[in-house]
Image 1 (tube, rainbow, N blue to C red):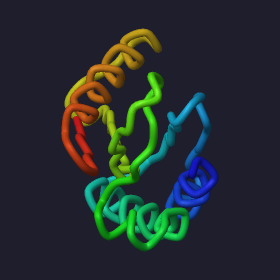
Image 2: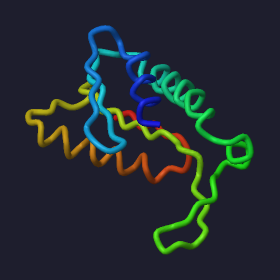
Image 3: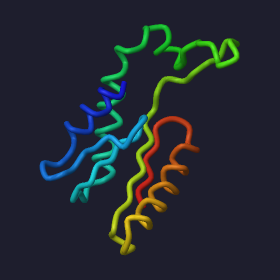
Image 4: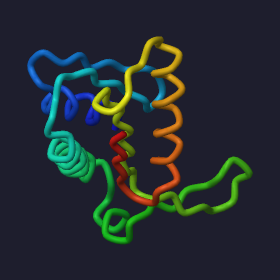
Length: 122
């Protein structure tokens, strides 16, 4: 799944963009891009298409997989979704990497609270 996301990001990254893996399931793209909504929609669409073969037909159609939680009890886990937190410098200037990090962490937290795919551009 991480490989599918990495390939999707590389496919959609503008030629002069930087794409990197931060760790876990977190990636970063740094780019000069002004069509952000279109870019996010394309990434979500292609990511969804690329992960569908990773699931059984029945899991995909029901929208979740049945697995066991850490205690060994059955648990329904939803099909993977993508949360995209976008930080721009259109309305605010950032002077330090700490400011950028705190702001993107805040946007990411908001994204994760949305069920399904999400994209917040700030």
